[in-house]
Image (tube, rainbow, N blue to C red; front, side, top):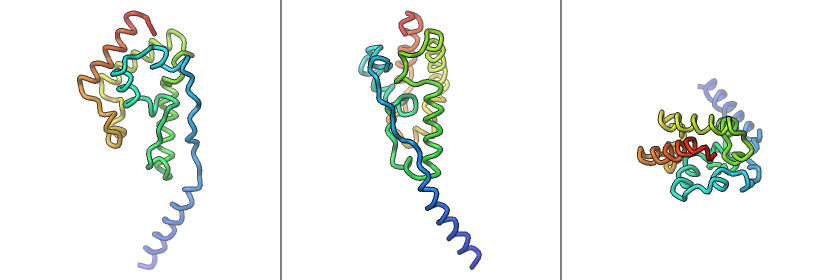
Length: 152
């Protein structure tokens, strides 16, 4: 029993100490001249869907939830955001070349169809990101129309 108390004590001490390891939660300013929903003049319904389901991880407009302020969860959240922005950052859309935009739109369509995005774990805590089949279809049609018309 004494050993269990020591383990518990040191576990709590370690948990308290890791809270002092900061992560950067500062978003870069959003330039509307290159931001996807602004440059594409995205229809309001589509804009709401993209912002609700994609922008937290795929833009510079991340809203960090309360649980993202506690290590080690904060580290995982920040890692997912960094990875998401590496694959697609809607806030930097206007800086991408034609081929990259085509690729990102195609991959977005594929991940929406396969229901791999938004991530299932994200949906649990963010109900607005839990897209219905009809909402997924709207996003897919919007992205497909952009690809077809080459208006990206």
